Amino acid sequence: MRIVIAEDDALLREGLALLLRAESLDVVATTDAPAPFLAAVDEHRPDVAIVDVRMPPTHTDEGIVAAVEARRRHPGLAVLVLSAYVEQAFATDLLAGGAQGLGYLLKERVGRVEEFLAALHRVAGGGTAVDPEVVGQLLARSRPDSTLSRLSPRERDVLALMAEGLGNTAVAERLFVTEGAVHKHIRSIFAKLDLAPDDRADRRVTAVLRYLEETQRRR
View 1 (tube, one colour):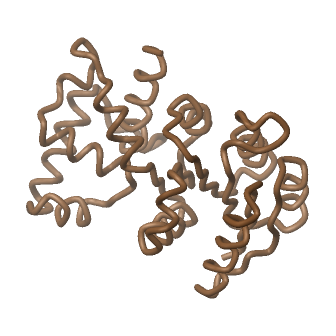
View 2 (tube, helix red, strand yellow):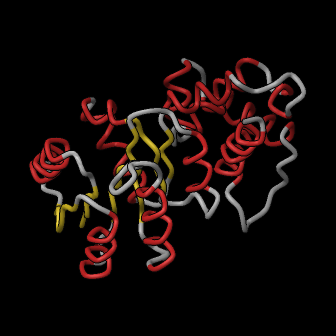
């Protein structure tokens, strides 16, 4: 796995590089700003880019803008975005262009090495990884008149774990239920969110996008 890191905090940037190299992953470049990040992606054609949301010069949304541009230039590029805070507007902007091979994690998750590495591998494999804290805040903010209000408490739990990128087996293990029960809950979620079967779309991802979009509209 070839990786480019874009992070302006030198300590975190080098710490990430050391961690990943210790796992025998190939960190081909580390950068501290959007322009050198895009240049590194163009040069090295990595499998995954790890990008900080806030980078110079204004430390607002430069990382998200750079990540979107990198995926425009290289459609197969997987991107794992790191943020110090839950910023659902940025998550929505990134995911709106297609959610395959995308992750959005809080920086504190990096310290939980196994979780961070699992999310990185899931994103590199074309999956999604949304931080549980992001999921929790988005679900907590859903209004009574939103489509999410149709879901039962257990279905909301299942949707939250789906949003983290977990498969049915992992969801079942986390909730201490059978895979069959998880499958039934997911079918019910799709029905209540009016997500019909469609080979052109990943309904799991669409379900996540649904409440990201709803939360964004309420801001």
